[in-house]
Length: 270
Ligand SMILES: Nc1ncnc2c1ncn2[C@@H]1O[C@H](COP(=O)(O)OP(=O)(O)OP(=O)(O)O)[C@@H](O)[C@H]1O
Ligand SMILES: [Mg+2]
Figure (cartoon, rainbow, N blue to C red):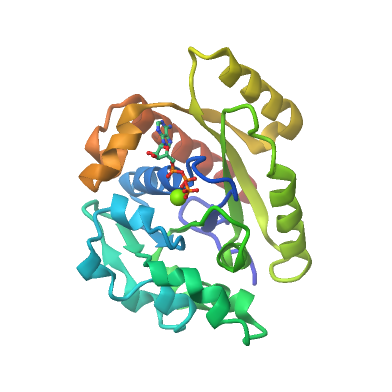
């Protein structure tokens, strides 16, 4: 498929937020990056593709509004447009997730094109006309769900926690991306790597950040997401931190990340 051009000239509009390590900030990044893009006037759709449903919960989608979910998108191949739920924030919507997503790989085992189901659903010109960005929150695994997300995406955005073993597992993630390029999605790019939970009082955070930059270079965003309690509190108020505490250091960081992503997109398109 030819690269599509958004209002910013940004070509990469379907982003898979992925890292098979658990608890590195995928969901926090999905919600707050999406919220920051929405705040800047972009129309953003989050697809919660994690059976844990943390993004859906963090956006205040209660159980009664999850009767139709990303399970219906993936397994049922229902039209995405009919599954979209509004959030408290303007320009930001979500297709929520439920626990039944966990059995998708078993249910789809007989479908030879099971890895392309999300690609078929999301790469629909009608849907893409409605959204400037579609951000997919992946589970902490390189399973069929994450493979579907990468097959559907223009690019992968990788949150990396500033801790000792940050780079561990990254080679496996990069190998998976290469495999997806070979078969399912030759155009898949790496949108960027974002360092999360950076603690400036901790020398280790700084060492890890330097090590990651030395290894990965420019693909690492200049913006670093600090450890900030507001980011962890916000989901219990069913709001993005960007809305819950707009001037917290976490919110400011995710706004800066959104700006950097838009700038990169504009540069790539130039
Ligand atoms: N920058 C941050 N500062 C403080 N707490 C954070 C930050 N980022 C994430 N957290 C908290 O760390 C925990 C893990 O974050 P998050 O849920 O975003 O990770 P995840 O990669 O989506 O996890 P999983 O792999 O389980 O899906 C959550 O409790 C979250 O609120
Ligand atoms: Mg998560």
